[in-house]
Length: 304
Image 1 (tube, rainbow, N blue to C red):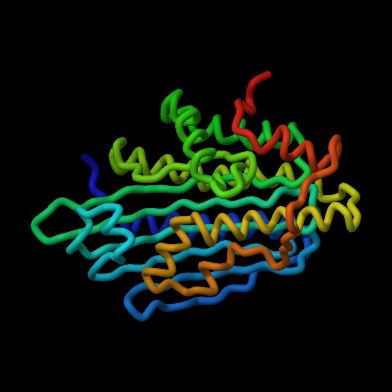
Image 2 (cartoon, rainbow, N blue to C red):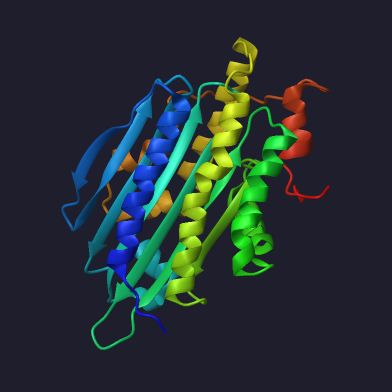
């Protein structure tokens, strides 16, 4: 079994943050990421990078963090009691992009690594991550492209990987209180260690590097699509679902807050503007109704 190497993972994650920021800046053409370095009093810190008011991106962030400590938060040990009494390191890159144009979907991605150690015992470690897409006015061409990239990067690791991790994504990014998916999904995985360190690490590299391949062509196709106030208001309404999921259901948000992470960086995922409307129902036959009727339902997007 290959040796677990935290430093190798960190080196990749820092490089991934750089490459994703560079790719998004080029796609935007105007906006630039502003970086803040932060330190966590209990151990660790990170690099938060935020882009605002670009030509394409209204607001987005690409964050790197590495936090460590001598004990796990209560939420983690309740879920994984074998972590009690262990020191830990958690590092990752997480991003959320909220475009201006309602015809460009919001996107999210992250890759992360966790290791817990105790003297005299083998380390407990795993990788997690994935990426998912949240369109407001979805186009089937874009959804198929997104999932084709996901399927292709999974293929070298086994024919069942895309199927399993797509389903995991559909199940995870599900708003139980709304009885709907957050978007059209993608990939989600956690607790990945069964392949050994080298293969598991290779997989998260494929996922991290695949994000731009999946997202940038969609930006290019939709950034000049005309829209008006009607589409803008629907975008803001649907962004409210994003807020609801992240604050009610997302485990990463809870873990970050409970481990004393930087609040501004953790809540970077929030959109700059959102709205709620009581008992909203789209007009029958409208583009908005199409989102609800055809796209917020898990399905085989790659079926011909």
